Image (tube, rainbow, N blue to C red):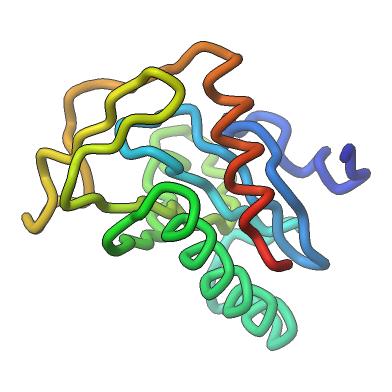
Length: 155
């Protein structure tokens, strides 16, 4: 599942590729504090949401619908937060932002998956997620999460 478009992601640690559509990559984020957290990154160089083309917005709408459905089926997610922040790009002297969305599933109840317990202590609060560092998982567990999401996507 290697795309010639993956080159655009060089220098960005968005995570492991789950799937790609005509205009977007869906990637399993490195931080899995919330089970199934993903990044949806544009396949072309663009640093501003206002620069998105109509066909990219339409494709994104389908991803939103399908990704949320997949996480409900796969892990019983309660609801979802979406954020397009791009703040970290501006920490550099020469910012190079790239349009991408953070997709954070939220869980009212704790979830057990592959022997790992996931809890969402910020559920129902105004913050998108806990600032308690990054939760990195073993490669095997990440691969199983990736597979479970992919098998539930209808894209």
